[in-house]
Amino acid sequence: MYPIACDAACHADAAWTHSGALVELTLKNRGSEAFKPELYGKSITIERRINADGGGGWKIKSDTGRVVSTKRDELNAICDHSNIQVDNPMNVLSQDNARQFLSASHAAEKYQVSRRTVARRYAFHC
Image 1 (spheres, rainbow, N blue to C red):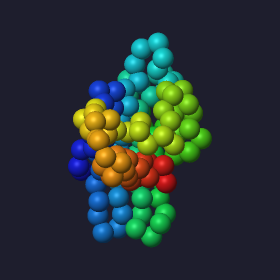
Image 2 (image 1 turned 180 degrees about the horizontal axis):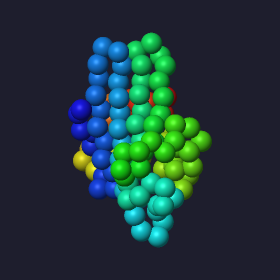
Image 3 (image 1 turned 90 degrees about the vertical axis):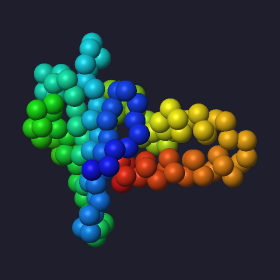
Image 4 (image 1 turned 135 degrees about the horizontal axis):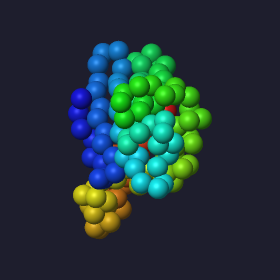
């Protein structure tokens, strides 16, 4: 697994093999705004498998590693509840990448940073 830059509220890893890729994103699920804390506990892990043949699937796990759901509707509910805008690629910029993006003086540099961010987005949104 390879770590992916994320903020303090999440942790992400990615692994690639000849048969596809696996991306895991763990979100903190604490406090009064937690999403179904009785079901998920203190964290929610979203596992996205992308097969080389184009297939794939989701697993949404509790803090104990138990699979709670494999449905896209549950993932959408988590995103809506947490105000995560998956269609906005700037949401997945790390703080360093955001600083680089904002300070880039040339349009070409901004395009390159944006392109790398969009590439990350597709791993989660496919």
